[in-house]
Picture (tube, helix red, strand yellow):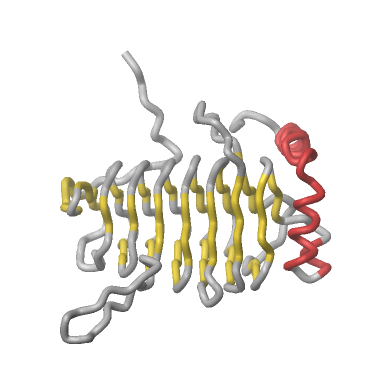
Length: 239
């Protein structure tokens, strides 16, 4: 779609959004003040299941039609099970453009907070559980079928009577690429301009790791340094 005009892109977007426009209108006018809601910044682009409690806030210098797309088709040749949005009373904050793919699932706990930065993309089948705090900064790419959860949904007891906390915050830095099939758990910090390799298990504070690092494995280790993904120039050339 890079070579299409703005008008062509708008027509395609309207065509994709039309079957689900009533749910989009319901979402926007449920959460946003009239001046924001009338612009319909949030669009559902696939069938969806929604629970609209708590708050949804847009903190951006602009409000544009369809700037947040839920259920976007990334043409992954996977079955579309629908988009799942469940806010049990917490808060979700969008700080700009956002694309969340088909078959993605977002669940926000009663006291949870999910903050999503500008230009964030989560591909097919991503799962987010924000029962405490998840903060995803700007220009983040999350590969398909990646799980991110700030809670284990339970605690454990020690023999001396002490109890584990069972949850902890997650913070994803700017320009981070989390590849497909990753598992990101509570108490994770990923610094700016880092790559998490496919299938990795991430559950610690990696703030001391330098930017432009490739982390991968279980447990995660530094595999390469001085490396990043340039989203404007990342085409494979097959021979």
